[in-house]
Image (cartoon, rainbow, N blue to C red; front, side, top):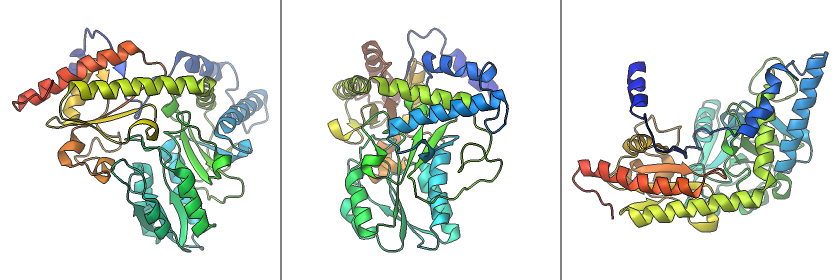
Length: 407
């Protein structure tokens, strides 16, 4: 296996250019973020924040200051509403399992959209073992949740609703304000959770203005370090811990806090919000150039998800008929363009993306999809290079079957 990987890496020698677009699954951490983190490994605040000595007090102060920054950007009332976790997956598990166990005496029904991330879908499946039931609300061809069916699903037994603010695969911006109002009008006791990992620093989102109960955010989705995320829990909402162990500064997540990663998360947030409108405009322009360029150069290429203002500014998800997505990611990698075929959660399983199936894509369309996400650091030259690489890669793969479909 190792030799096979080494051979693949040797095949990448001499690349003209490299363009990393797989932000869905991991990210390049900017130099400013790395530099902000480094002192906290060996020079400052390297102690346990619960201990009564100088390094411990420094760590406590640093964690509180970093958490305060994140809470301000999210629109929290107090920094205590932010609960740091090792990532988005853990935050979603805490939100769903913690709420289900805290509310089990009030009902056993959970409602989600059918295009939620795996860390929501699989958790609700697991909760069935404990007597909970899940209702999945369908979406339309653009991935927008059916609000009328959501309304009909909410009853006195509904304890939790989870709908992502932005879909992680196709970039659909959900009508969260309307969905939340429907839920609370039908049952004010129902807890409303949103995975906001793909909306944080991408679209305006203020948890206090929206009156959301729970919200998940992730560091690497905003070019911060991997291994750190957070769950916003509105003051007064009851969530049970799902892990036991040494309690530090985080009341809902035990263990010793990773101060450098927390600093990196705060710094990445700071950079993302520093020129928020400018950053979003940059991503939106590059997104649209990629979409229009691909459609103009490659026949039988379809955009998955909505266009324009209903789509996250960074998201490009395309399907290419007669072109298997995993093969296309390899071919593009050999040209220095790094993308993913569907989400990281499902690409190792020989099943089409549940998101693409939900919006009506057939088997071939779903398997022929690739996902790209742009950032404020990408340049016009990067997009130009990608638009040169994709038609060639598609032509090569389709050519194996005798039909290129490239204009």
